[in-house]
Image (cartoon, rainbow, N blue to C red; front, side):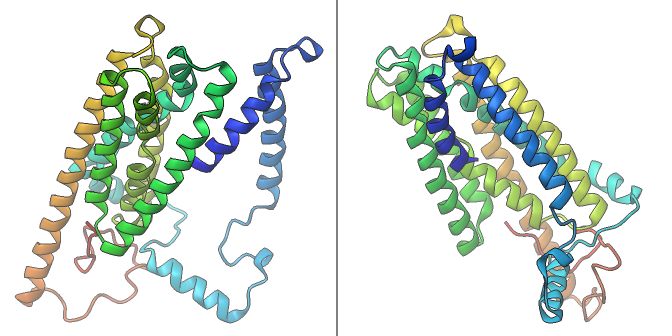
Length: 314
């Protein structure tokens, strides 16, 4: 998304020069051309995208297929053709599910608002033309790429996902504070460049992927948080009200509160992961677990809760 934002800035600037061609405004050309390309690409993907990791399209050797099989097993999930109701009931009883839902909603309020209205916010400062405002989204996207890459590397390297996400929330919060209190000038641009949710959202997706086991359970988590992703991106732009320009203080205040709450939610999830890991280590130390992990854990479709050998990443 961050890379597409940088490329999209260049494309958007180009479409400005198409304003009035064939009697159509620039935004109509933008929707028409990109809509046709997207629809055509969707058809191609639907027809040709492999639906299995060992698809014949990849022309894998038998050794490569074995490697793929091991990687799939390592994800603690095997695809099922039926819905396991017990997985869903287990999910709705977990406080972490509602943490994931809230975090997804709050972060995508920011994503929806800033993704659409960052150009408007820059232009409302009065120092930049429409074209310059669009182009200034490019450095914001470049910074997002750097922060996302750094967050992914650090969280994996240190095995500290939650703290990295909290740091990302703090940076985003600082960005919105800049947008509210810093005098006009470079500080405003710095605020826009910081007011992104890329790093913490990337870590959020990683936590959701590695800390949930069981096919139906993981699918349920992903489905619910995808809904909140959409709700957040729909609702976020509604916070930007023109009567509050150019600072949009009510919207910025809501987003600051959302990032602060997200930080606390990440910390709570980290605490819950540590507590559960300690409980399982105590069971193992007191020999209350089988001496060996159950065989074919993935084939039995155990969840992270029912498989007491599952260790949560923090």
